[in-house]
Image (cartoon, rainbow over all chains, first blue to last red; front, side):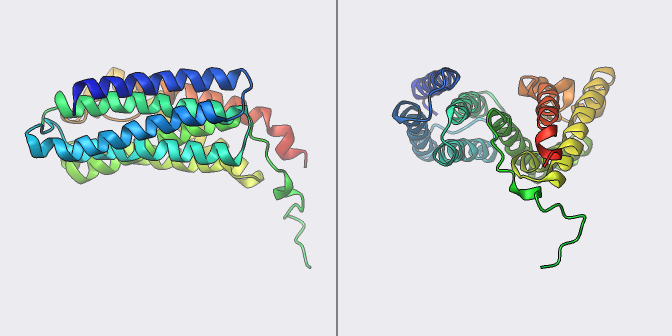
Length: 122
Length: 151
């Protein structure tokens, strides 16, 4: 993993989480802003997937379990899709909160992925 | 069109306006996916080193999946399933949480299996969400009792 990218990703996922939860609590239905923020988090995760594939080839290998890392990454990649799909089906403010919680969960999961990659030992 | 008296005709007709319950469901879903995928990973890799905590993790993961579905699906039967699974979770987190404090060796496993199960130390590895969630779930189910029973 690339440290600055990971920090950026966690920061944006957490910010998107706060944004969507606040928007939802202020009775905002899922819209361009909340869906866009969630989409940005998903995009960053796709970037992380690319980094995870390339990094070991250029000498940046995980210290921990690569399988566990990918389980986290795949689940994280699925979350915005699930939350976003739900937000399209049930368009009320709670769907906006759901988007935010998915982003929060991703922030936590990326922190955990970073621990697996850099701290955890086999 | 024969209809058995036990099958209440109105049973599935409630279009559940889940509302805030959806927030509960997404947290359940994330916990379900997290606990289950982690248990699958542990069974595949380090199962022999810590059978008790990993088996327990797998069971809790499956129960979280059932609870998520039960909260999501309409009808009285699923309402009852939701009560059973959520009660089981509260029971699990209280019992395993207490045991893990009294005798950490039961659930410690190897160093690779940190925090043992989703329920160890009352779910500290999962921000205590496993402890809070069943209580919130029960409150929500109770608030929906009239809606489900009153059809």
